[in-house]
Image (tube, rainbow, N blue to C red):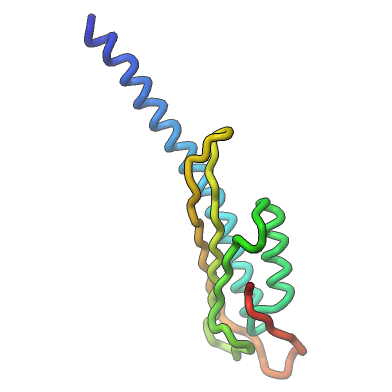
Length: 136
């Protein structure tokens, strides 16, 4: 009888612990998928235009508005950093977003979610008139 009294709260604790970590995992995977998609979109844009452009920067700013994070907190790294990148060379983009996981008013922690995207440049010199910028 005593073992049932002791095991019931322990069993409930273990079940709630698994449920909590399951919810955290699902939510963070969804957030990471959004960051990964944004990094791939930036890389594809770089592949098309031969570098990081104002259009890519405005797309990142729009992404920040959608996920309700200040643009200053989102880090974008690109390579090669100087444009234009000629036809056939690999370009990459890395987007890092701080994700604060909260349960009501309680902050569980802040985790940096990083997405990486790769593409191949299809830019032909002289084909477009494009200006390049550095990510901020």
